[in-house]
Amino acid sequence: MRSDILALARARGVMIATAESCTAGMVAAALTDLAGSSAVFERGFVTYSNAAKVEMLGVEPATLDAHGAVSEEVAAQMAQGALSHSAAHLTVSLTGIAGPGGSEHKPEGRVCFGVSDARGTRTQTIEFGPLGRDAVRRASRDHALTLLHEALLELPE
Image 1: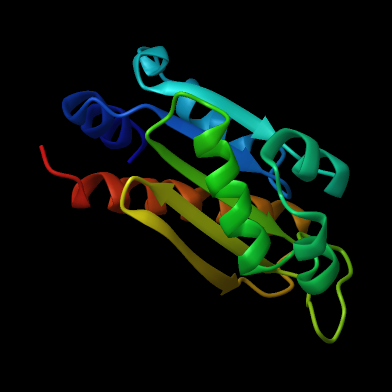
Image 2 (image 1 turned 90 degrees about the vertical axis):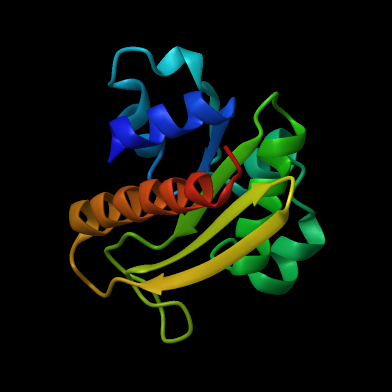
């Protein structure tokens, strides 16, 4: 799928950026592991702390206070911030609880995603469950790649 993402982005003239928290750059690494990725991968933001989300992506402190870092509201602002702080045309963001741990309200394995482009921003939350830290992070990376692929398929050629 990674090569499909790069081919679709190249065919559509789309540059991609990522904004990652719980995966700490795994999506960016998955895309840039492939030769030729520099033609379509603009940059990646690793914003593990709330301060980084605010400083690098423009996430509103009030949004973090009201909803917490693991929320669709923050994922949306991360995706929008990556779009406005880069030359990318398409961004994906993710923020979640890889584990171990979590709470009753925000359990281990909950990851919120955002996708932003000229058409707007879409968000979703996936409950991967307590699979363990490595498995949640890998599943999150793979889902983010799927979201990019789907977004690219929806764009006109």
